[in-house]
Length: 305
Ligand SMILES: O=C(O)CCC(=O)C(=O)O
Figure 1: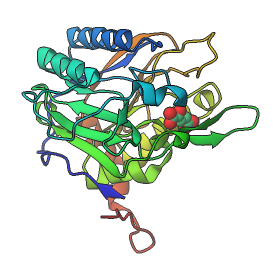
Figure 2 (figure 1 turned 90 degrees about the horizontal axis):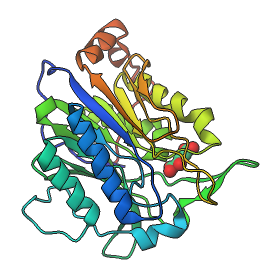
Figure 3 (figure 1 turned 135 degrees about the vertical axis):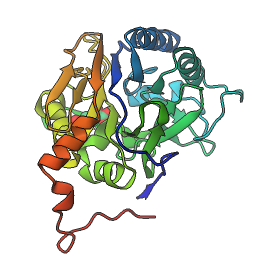
Figure 4 (figure 1 turned 120 degrees about the vertical axis):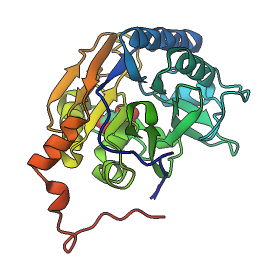
């Protein structure tokens, strides 16, 4: 596994607390409407004082392998400048909203069609000036078969990404890691983000379901927070029931480095806003100094270049 380098090394001591918002939006078959609703929630996040706002996995598209190719957009690479034109309607909305609100936005994810025809589940993060500061392609595809529960095979349609992702947000003096949904089940990825890329907040746009949601969602988020003594913020679409499609669990959630749930939603559309005090991270790391107690003579985390 290779790691992408954040755009700047964070300074210390930690900056002032900032507000983080999770936009638990409803997602329908109507792509234009999904994008408009996402913008509306982002504007509300800004009005609530957020400096960092997050959209759900597949915020512009039903979470359905049958939809991914039809809804897919071409997306630019990291570093794409606000002055450059682009065809992606989702990116246009993200960068316009970031510029207007001066927030960092982790743009959930959208299906991406690459030059070679492959489709990825991709997340763009945009800085307040509208630059693309991170692009994460979901690294672990959601291929599962739980008897009596759920069967899903993203790899029927999607290709996997190949790196761990994080970006530095100077305005909040914080490195933010980005993973997508099933990625949260792989502690090694989060460890790379926290230890090698310096992420202090791990963000996961995600859409768990009615089988694995109640069983594992909170447990995994709190687990990743404790493993790495970082904040974890996961943003789901709201639940839409009644169709034949995928039913999202919802429950967007922010967890602190102690494993405490700071804020969460139920299954309905919601804006979750909470304060992130990075000083908490230092307090927890001093109290329980696992990062200095590792036995690298027994085990070692190694990223693959
Ligand atoms: O890991 C899970 O249980 C759910 C994952 C998922 O829904 C996804 O990767 O989109």
